[in-house]
Image 1 (tube, protein in one colour):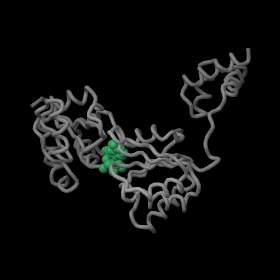
Image 2 (cartoon, protein in one colour; image 1 turned 45 degrees about the horizontal axis):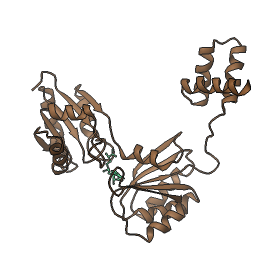
Image 3 (cartoon, protein in one colour; image 1 turned 30 degrees about the vertical axis):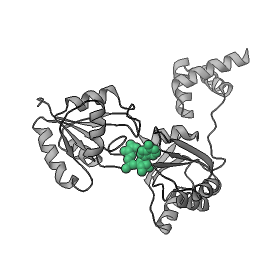
Image 4 (spheres, helix red, strand yellow; image 1 turned 180 degrees about the vertical axis):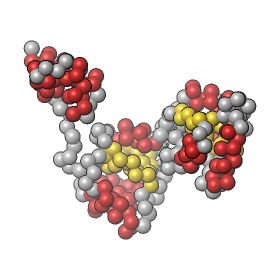
Length: 282
Ligand code: SAM
């Protein structure tokens, strides 16, 4: 056992076992124990990488009891790696409670980043990513589902939800009723053999998925309301804004920082865009 206990929150693959980081493999190898949502699932990952660290279960049904016990062991110096069945622990699966308890107890917590179905689906959807809202799993019953969707109708962001394959068509139909004709995508079995991303309007997707018996794991991604899509300012506009601030007495560095702030862009993007604007004006 190491002198300094800590909790290592380890992201694991959402399908393809190759999607694990070198740092996570080291952590899983060196930890005193691995707390896993389902030890059978994690055992497959460990045997694939020839790792033999002791596994113990940490899931929704035993976390009330197991959390104080794990905190106690970390306080005494144990290094505990926390993993869930897939992706980043704590994102719609057990983990957040243990992180909270460790931080409350003043213990060290490190997150080792990696896969998460949210970001993978968002990137695969091709829908706008300037802002997104992750809604976890939507309510199953019709009334609460409609109310939850209504509460999000005016949000200027892409919406991301986890969903069971059996309910996906119904959820898309409800979303079409409440949100209207938006672009959407269903990302299924990401990083796995039968990976598929289906795109269309909410109504088109609801209809096509209704006709299929969907299997596997599913993320629903719904684009922002029509007309609210923030367009990226063009390079000439950015350059004009930077030039105006410089003419008013700002240093070029400050001007770029101010324009980046006001447009919600990174400073490098503003530098690049200002340079492109200069080229275009030449
Ligand atoms: N902690 C995980 C993460 O970081 O993505 C999420 C756990 S949550 C209990 C499981 C849900 O994530 C599934 O029901 C599905 O909606 C989504 N999911 C996980 N793996 C997926 C995959 N390979 N393809 C599509 N969706 C996936």
